[in-house]
Image (cartoon, rainbow, N blue to C red; front, side, top):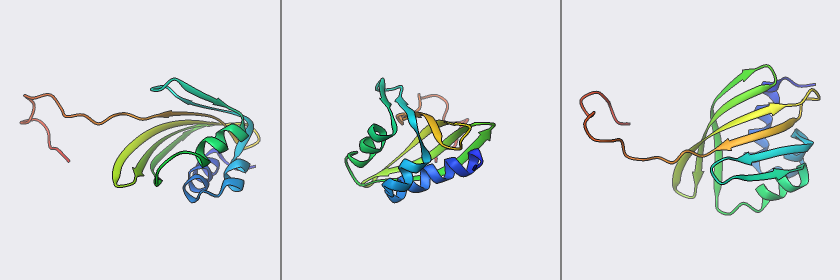
Length: 124
């Protein structure tokens, strides 16, 4: 049985590598994937693997930070689709058997900050 951290690291590594059999092996049979911003839910390993296989574009995922608490992890992930950099926050729950059973994937949209606080911040 693997630790939550090992499972989550394997989740990202196999997804980035597009190693679909290894990715499927990291997932529980009844995994649930949700994206709150589009209100989409995918149930089951086969459907979730297919969703990723068919996802359009030349996308790449690099975890920047993974924080683990028991069977849950919060992940800050650098994403690139083609030449466009983005980031995502994912919350992952791991089952007792060491496989991913739930993923909540949040894709914040970047925006320009409001005027009037330039003297307080440094843009990066």
